[in-house]
Image (tube, rainbow, N blue to C red; front, side, top):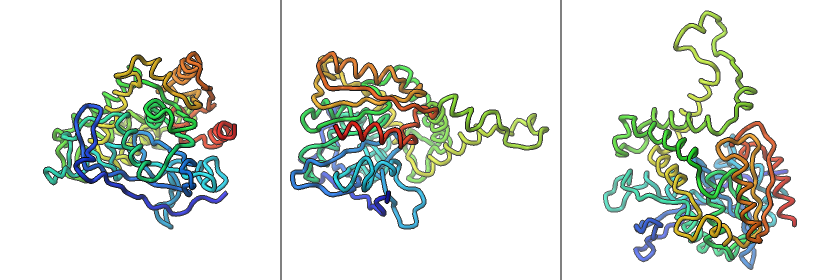
Length: 372
């Protein structure tokens, strides 16, 4: 099946002071620019739309190529296009970079209009709920009247659940993948160690560093820690085992020699430094820590009971960052409230990363759900 070809990222700015955005914290932020991509066409009734929400270091480029000679397509490319599960002959597919991001949407690396310098740590704390409210404003601008589906994994799945609670009549169905309605203590602990890796780098300088510079070593270490949580013991063993990088047996006793798994972690760390902002990493992991759909609502269970649409909660067998009991619990709570919810599982050795790898399994599960 053919893909969708070259896609241009677009931007929309909520430009005027009356449009300054009221955040969940009570602070106001503006103007806000949102980077987004669309695939397919909006129908005359404005209700054939699938919204895809990205994870921590993702962006709006979910499918297609940025340039004709681009070798790497969008991060969910195999799911989107003519005759694929998110069929662009039938649906308008939308994905936007989240509030607080660094891929075109206003975030800590954006220029503060009051100073002309990057916001840095002067940027206000944002939440998953704030991200969803900004996405809603974007969809209003695009002429969307109702969503066919909201779908996403990990931090994207957090947005999916907030969508279903904050705008319960705005969509037909949601698919949260490898996520939870509130982040666990274990998840918060992992995020804190990653933030400390960045903040203890002297080049972080309290978040005041030049664009294109800053705490590269700290961000690299944060990504290495995160990468460990995204995999599973089975996937590490299958990919690397105890393979040593040197073929000379004497090198095993040289302290600077590495196992291949160590080289892989360093590679992943360096790769993120080349494309991501350190302060953004701090803010988005903080937003994940604050994620709790029950906050400022009657309770966690009653918040979930506000969901009216169909729900398909998907877990991953080897995911220890968001273990399957979190997704199963969501379904149990929703069913007790009389909601139409079900659970499906991706059988995979790839850990949390499986929602970015197991395209065939996900497509089969989602296609059946969409056709009902």
